[in-house]
Length: 301
Length: 332
Image (tube, rainbow over all chains, first blue to last red; front, side, top):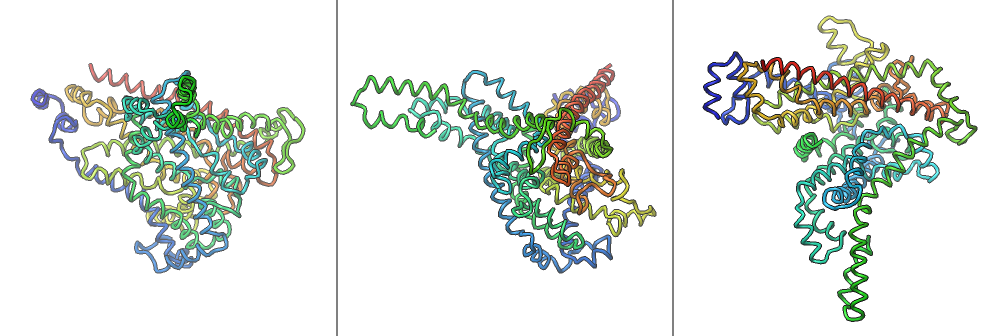
């Protein structure tokens, strides 16, 4: 293979050699030039600067912000002070942090459990209508459910759940994406022999799920946890509609902060920083998993 | 669930009492377990989707045909009255225009940029993981937080963007009063968060393209740019369709970013950046508290999304297949 390509390399048109070296089969592939890295660095700076900008403003004060549209690249001295002001402000920021944690943790655990259960059934169990039901679930991903907000609110009001975290947690307890994701993974990762062995040993269906499928699903379950956690941590529309100002999650608290302190940009940005830090830390620890999760999902989807 | 899990236990502890009957019972339970368990396992999704997805969408239609107040509840049946009301409001058309404008400004550049970034990431880079993680960083910033950051970056007075524009001799842009400028600012928040995410999706699809296709293109003397347009883009077609469809569904419902673009959350003095979902919220939970009209808007938007989704699908298909024609031309 490599010799035939090499001989062609000499005879073919202009970009041939460069392009051939691009293909991965050829072992010693060429490293890309500075244009590639420059493009990447520019894109990365554009991605990271807005986040850093929020830290810069959060460590400043409103007078300085008003005077200097372009903040200095070194953070100011007031970050701790501003964070303290946000956390002790009258919008109950700590309360919001706690609420966001509760919602995100419960939602993630629930989605992973129910999605793995359903994914196991779709991937490894035989039952009537399996194919059709799976296609239906995938199709529901295209349904703009946000548009059902009015009746959903009416239902929640009937149940007396408006203003409570239950109203935010329950609608997100299992997602079509999660079921699809776990089905895909378990189809490939869980051998039938393991399930059969468990069944022969006298395990009930649920026990063989619990002891065989659940452990096998761990890597995919970890990724699903991450995505669900990020999604529910950053979710705004429905919590904003159903929770109200007395019992906010973090994004709702940020809205309240903006509404009541819109002139104090150092304070608002401190709120932004406080709400973003947990996910940035999560990203530092598990960003690699997020990247490979997105890439795996793309190939399969 | 607990009963099925416990089935084997009684037969094991008391096997002698009535073997044949017990065995038969056990077999029956076992068979039921095998038959019913799959449905039991997939039922949580269907139950939940029925309650929080399907039912609300259908019930939205019912609500939209009635007088319905946020607190007062259901009133008289008024047929299409709410739809007529909504469609007679100039504000509805403003909202529709804004939504489409923001959607186009965010989806088109985003898909193009994401494909370019993906192509760059697909090169044989040093420190691959670092670059891939780097482009994904904005994904962990909540839309609300991004909106607060960008509304400051795009502030009319003493904003960073206007200051930089001033340095190169451009007059300050009225980011918060000019409709198009405000749409650009809001679209940039969306692009900030999703371009890197979509680039990774495209990257994965690019890596799935068989390398011998590129070798064949090389033999035909295709340059790298030519390879990109004649091999990469056509083969990305399913992925492009996927990304475009998902960004249509999300993009036309956009709420967080425009809602947080200023502290009032009404979409500006002339509603110049109010989107359809913001309008829905304002009708239902604002001064009017009319759930009927809000539901009518929801249904209209639903139909719009379906229509745009179909149009998008056919356009993307055509673009990608014309790429394929080019590829065939290149093979000659």
